[in-house]
Image (cartoon, rainbow, N blue to C red; front, side, top):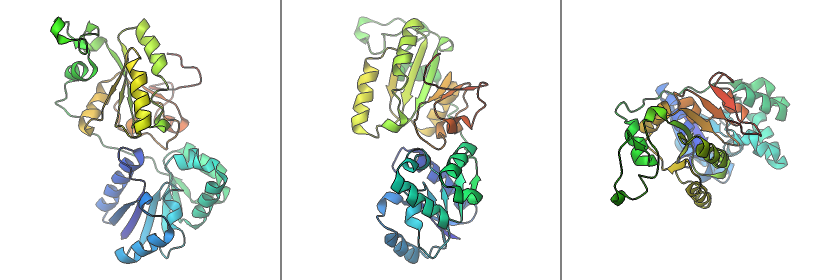
Length: 312
């Protein structure tokens, strides 16, 4: 089957990563998948032309508002996948909510990644209750087997490992931290593109205070500079925060190795469907902020939801 797949494909975002994985699965199942960025289209009429030009037989949209509204009124059947902000943010806007309700009326089915997302959608649009299904995500990871955790800590975070001594010529960038074994460090990792919805600054002050009391505790933020204005704010806050580090994005294999080696993964997003970092992580512990992320883990066993009072 020739499928049109609409999603927001802005680089370094969860929707773009998820869309790529879904396309790969659809094509592995024998379908021909035409993946397009929803932001490249302004109206359903442009989609109609694409359907004819590509001889498309059905369609799928990731994000009920950004993608789903463009699939209305065509001659081919379509389904939608909730993205996260469509439920958590767009549903709070009257006009967008009405548009999404009409999309659900026409859609053959809707997919939620978690039971929490399904429950939210059914409350917002009761008429769609019978066509919303839960399909959990599954992600295969291949951490870099040659990744050196000690080298990463030394080169990327400025930590001096295994008791070496620094000469004055070495400057302070690599010599200002404690001398100790990696086994004695507690690295809390946040993986996100630097933009407000991911809110990586949520725990900066708390971790900085904790680090001053317990010097072997660190928070590390890893991710690309998505929002230039917000990135400047993050850099300035991190620069002044003891025990907090910011490093640029890494290749996926190395990042998976870092997640595997860190003490705990932290997700401070204020809105999303399901954190890919949580799905990808082979973590020993996880701290999350919103209920949908908690669907992946057993609360109180390896994971803890962050409340209004941050208490470590």
